[in-house]
Image 1: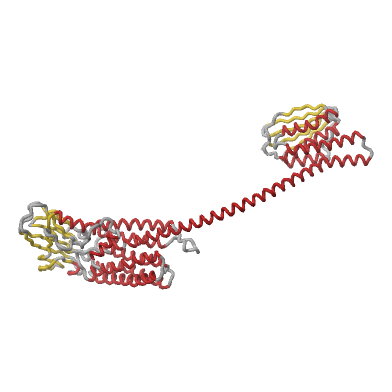
Image 2: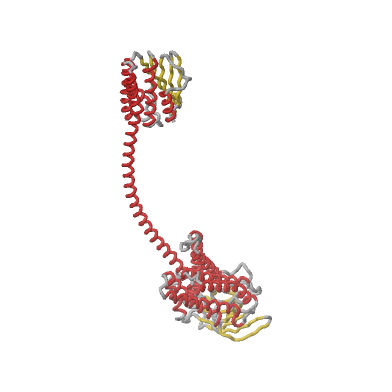
Length: 620
């Protein structure tokens, strides 16, 4: 496959984002009819204090002719035009440097850098174009190009193009898009993918590791690789590095080494080789190559031994050649789709990497550019695919889980609804049972007790008919009150007292007891439920029954009013009284127990002519 086809194919993948049109080498292929390509030059080479003069053909690659040595050179190019042009012309130099001066017919038309200060800024990494002043060109012309070349920085001079500004400018624009704009796009893309990958590494756990929670290393390897590749490619755009040469030359080499190490581990992670013995051995070998990159680069650039770096590049290339062949073979045997995508990226990069190794190290040309800076973007696209595929797979799993969860929730809702129905039935049955139990207990404690008393009175034969009648009336009143208690509003003390008045006032009147009513309209006490209301009813009834049976009173006063946070009930009679300091009898003890059950305070004061039973209820 020719170089031009490779470049067109890369552009077809959209790697250069705007590098449309046919791509040539940094110098165009076929000369235009009116644009001259200058190849023959008389050169004066100054190396190590010695000067050589010779006739040569451009391009002149300084590192190839003077390995490991710095120096300066002056190239003299003569050319003849049919006639002096009457339109603007330009001079296009695909590559020169590292510092340079361009003179035409004795006039300086362009210069960059210090010609005497070695290892300074590098102005030879991008193509140059120099507009020529009108009238400067003649029929016979002499072009002088002076360069300062540093060790290992690809100094020298390519072929020179001169011609009409539109034609030469088009050639320059094409080379600039390929070497500068394309590099900027690659740097931007790599930085974006690298930062996104590191963000994913920080935020996304490794779902494949069920033993312990940790971050997914795949994103870490991809992020480091992309950031290092941005440094590697971005070196072509840096004319004034932050470190002096040759130390700055070590930086892109180390960046390439870290990129290779990260990409190798990335690929093994995709293929699930990282836990295999061969995978661990490969990881250690890549680590050794990465650690050797800095010393080998320093040896090659600092001590003028380019073969050291060539050997390192060859070792890296052979490693990835073998690795790529194995990786591709495994992908063809039914591996996962991400494995196959990454395998294609490895195959492409290995092929382009060997092309660059041959062009730049084995049979070095001068006016050429690395293609691997663009083919490496395929790794970034592969990572994007893997991330999208993972999110698609996770989204599908989430949808399946949600559907399964929804089905389970529906089943549980049906089960819960059935359980609630059964519980409600049980609760209703239990409530009915509790209500029957309560009614029976109330009848036993109230009506039953009075009937038992009436039976004992009859059996003894000592009770009068009036006493027996009083006991039976109490039993009947108790039964009526038990029935009334079923419909008492919770917390409504006023209604409870009114109901007792309705039931017992006829008996009080028949007993010649005058009832005085001093009950206020009291807000319902929220904490008194139906059970508490029944307890309170029994307490008040017991107090009233004692007055009817034992007090021999002529006046009974019922009082109820709100007293701050409390509700106070008082039952006052003017009967004969009793000694309240002696042990309480059964009825009074029952009242105390009921008061304690509902959180009320019961107090009793008695003297001849005045007995007061007081019940104090807390509202909350």
